[in-house]
Every structure is written in structure tokens, then in C-alpha cells.
Amino acid sequence: MKKLLTLVLGLFMMLSLASCGDSEQKVTIKNDKGENVEVVLNKTDDEKVVRQALTYAAQADYEEVKALHVDLNGNVKLTLNDKEGFEAEASLALAADPTNEVVYGEAKGSFSGAFMSGPVDAQVLEKHTVSGSAHLAYNNKDPKDELYVYAGVSAKVDEEALDKKVKVAPQEISEMISQMMPSIPGIPSAPVQAKLAAPALPGLPQGEITEEDVNLVLAQLKAMFPNSKLEISYVSGEKFTLTYNLSMKDAIKSLDQVNGTEFSKELTNDFTVKLNVDFELKSGRFAGINFEVQNSFFVKLMGYTKEDITEKSDFHLKLSFNASYDSKEVKTLTAEEKAQYELYSFKNPTPEPEPAPVA
Image (cartoon, rainbow, N blue to C red; front, side):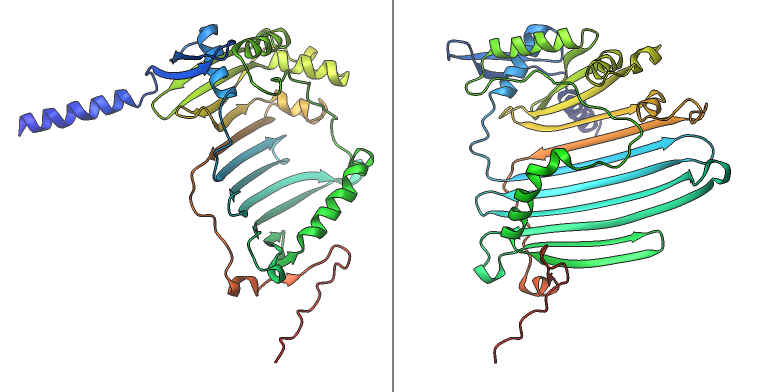
């Protein structure tokens, strides 16, 4: 019995060590001459190994992808003071099968918040809650008379409930998008606390990507964010993770240059946000990204004034995005489920009655 127990414990320890992400894994990349070269990936911040890992990811082949499954989860919480603030959660699951031309997505979300509103001399505290779910389905293999985008939403805004299922012709959606595209730059936006634009990031060239191309991008990234650092933080037989330790001093300075703001002067203590990007070890394909940040400085970035910010002010954001390319079956709607959707037209928002069946 002791020998059996020792063997089980030994196997358990071996499995634990094997899955800890400190292993070395061999992958193949193409060098500048187009030759296949075997390289070793391991947990490190060595610039050469990091460059090879990024090159492997950049050279990943997506041509053979048969299906795409995406999961997005996010949580954000803002605290201004004892009374004001909000918290929101959202999730999205999307599955697409390009071969069979099927798409199905589900989303869930919730929001609860309290803010002062009204004239300055007579402000009142307003509390609002929103919760709900939505889904979308499309199957290009449906018969012509059933070819629609099916969308449903069930929500509750404060005390008002909404439950609706509609189907829209794909060509109507295409026409609507075409009409919106030329006018998007001129659409007046709602007032926001602060107008921010993301800095232009260096990008990889089109066509065959080489290690030299990746090296050039990394050099540009280093020049733009000198206090930030890229490393391989995890390697196993399933995946490897590239972690970008983003210095907020670098990020805020870049935003200031783009927007003409001076937020960097208010950032007295630099802090780092870890952006973790996962890749499949076998293929090098993108597998997900996640990050978490908690710092009151983001309250300032949202445009709130010093009068709004107190010692209790804080901002917490957590986001994860995962992708997989296996060929799991994508959900499709049955005839019974389709019958529950009303026909909807953007040209005529009032749902049209279904034609009576021919006797």
C-alpha cells in the first residue's frame, strides 16, 4: 500500500510540474531566407527568444480554420464617493462556422449605478439598474424564404421590462450599414467627460512576415514605450503567453501627444498594467487576451474634476477574451423557434404580420 501511495504521489508531482508553465517547447519559424528553423520557447524576457515567439505567432496559418468560438467577459467598477458610482458586467459567447455559413451569439449584461443629476443647487441622487440578455442567429443554408438574421433581447431597465424577438432580411442590414458608413465621421456624439484617442501603434507588414519585420516592430514599440517590457510569462505543451508590462507613464504620455492633454503631469507614481496574450503552441494562433487594472488615476482619465474625486474614488477593470478554432457544432434555430420571431424592417419599424398560410 505504501508503494502504491508513493507512486500516486510521485505521478501527481510530475503532472503538477509539467503543467506549471515553466517548460521548454520547440516550434518552427521561417527565417529571413524562407528556411524553416527550429527554436526553443521558454519563460524568459530574453529579447531574442521573445522575438522568436512573436515571429511564430505572426506566421500562424489561419487558412485551415474550420470554425471560430469566442468568449468575452468583462467587469468594470467605478467609485466616486460614498454615494456615486457604478458597476457593470458583460459576457459574450460567439460561434461561427465559415464552412456551413452559420453564426450564433449570446450576450448577457448588467449595470447598476447612482449619480447626482439636475441643477447644481438642487441635485438629486438617481439610481438605475439594467439587466438583460440577447442572442443572434444566422444560417446561410436556410431556404430562401427563411433566410433572415434572427435577433432577440430580454431586458429590464429599472422597473420596465422588454422582451422582443425579430427577424431581419440580411440585405436590409447590408443597406443600413452602407448608408451609415459615409456619415459615421460626421455623426454628432453625445457629450463625454473627456475626449481620448488611442495612439497609432506600429504594425506588421502585409505578406510573408519575417523575424526581421518583427524586430523592427519591437524596436518601434520600444521607442514609443521605453519603460514598458515584453516577456514570455508562460510556456506549456498547450500554449504560450506573451505578457506586455505596459508602463502607464508611457501610455499616458502617448495619449497626451495625440490629444493635446496633460494627464501625464498628474501621474506622479508610475504603475504597470500586465497585458497577457495567449497563443496555441501547436499552431501559433491567437488564443486570447486578459488584463486587470485597479487604480484611481483612471477616474481622472474619465474626465472627472478634482471636486468629483475623493479618497474613496477608485476604478477597477477586468477583461478576458478567449478564442478557439475547433469544429464544435454551432447552434441553429429549429422551425418552432423561428416561428416565435416577428418580421422587422428598418424602413418600416412596425413589425409586419406574417402572411396567412395557403390552404
